[in-house]
Image (cartoon, rainbow, N blue to C red; front, side, top):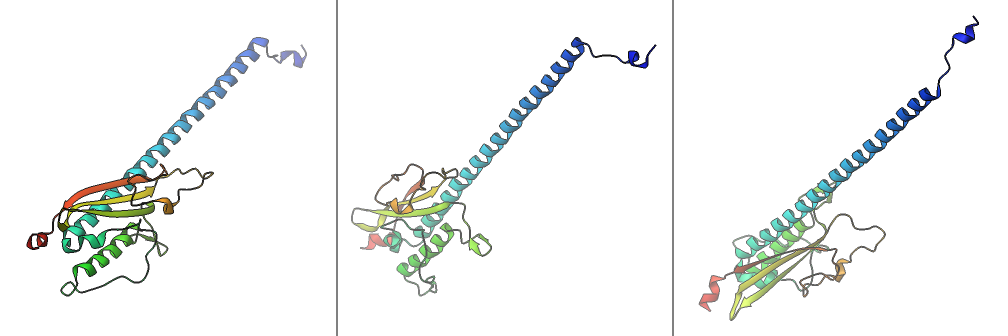
Length: 207
């Protein structure tokens, strides 16, 4: 018997089974790819949510820190207020004064310098540059005196910052468009946090 006659020739049924197995492998790969993509998207979304939560937590910390500073220096409450958003830059040198000889207004100037530095990320530096959890942070401080009590009344600290995910194909929000006279920013992409509290200056009772 010739040697070649001993070789088996694949039948049509065998070819069909091989083709189906290949299709099953391809389908499995596609399904796994979609599954891995879904996991990656979920992880990215979770990281984004965690970062946004850390932004809001830090904003609350900053607002409360400034409120605490003002409460310990109520004779100069109005010295902390801002006519326009602050946080874009710091000019000049840090005001300094000894606690014993520092006037309430001088202490307010030093407090605001230190606080704006923290807002801009002075506590964390990378390669010598300040880094902050908040993106393009700005802040407003408003005070509404209670009747004739000049340093007693309602204090509001408002912070603005940008979230992650700003479309690079769109013009970014302009910090110069923010206004302390408006509670909500014109551009809805800005994140906002406001804390209201009541501050009382005991010296107002002696007037």
